Length: 173
Image (cartoon, rainbow, N blue to C red; front, side, top):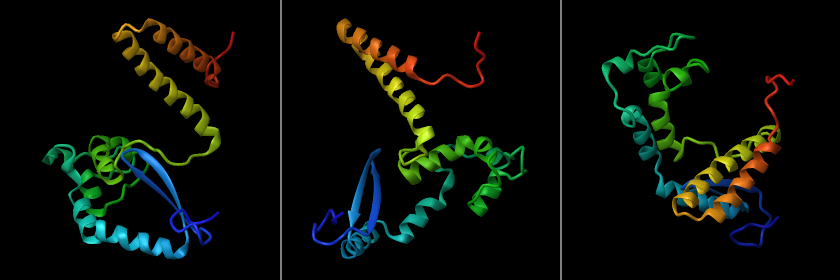
């Protein structure tokens, strides 16, 4: 595979950029990767990045009470998380969810995952995502009274819902 920038050298560096919830992959040679690195450093200085991340509670209104919120599993408080910058256990995500979602959105640009995932998980999640997207389109079609389009979308949704693997915990009769 050749470098996407110079198209002369073999690509040895593979970058994935997510900008405005759009994922693009860049395959670069060493030289172009160094140039891209300097370019990014100029746009996002390390000091600016750290300064932006230090204000953790900006997204949700933080009070003295919020700093006392405690994880039921490990006992870590939100104030402890702000000091350390790391969560104590997987249950902390649920305990501090209200304050973590705005933080994740600021850091990553989104609070939804758009990257790679194991194939066994990817297909069901993609189908579920497609169905949700189609339901929004269906509502729009109904609201503008385009019933032919609405019927077509409804049929696609039914087809996708029928092709989804059923939950293993459900009992069959």
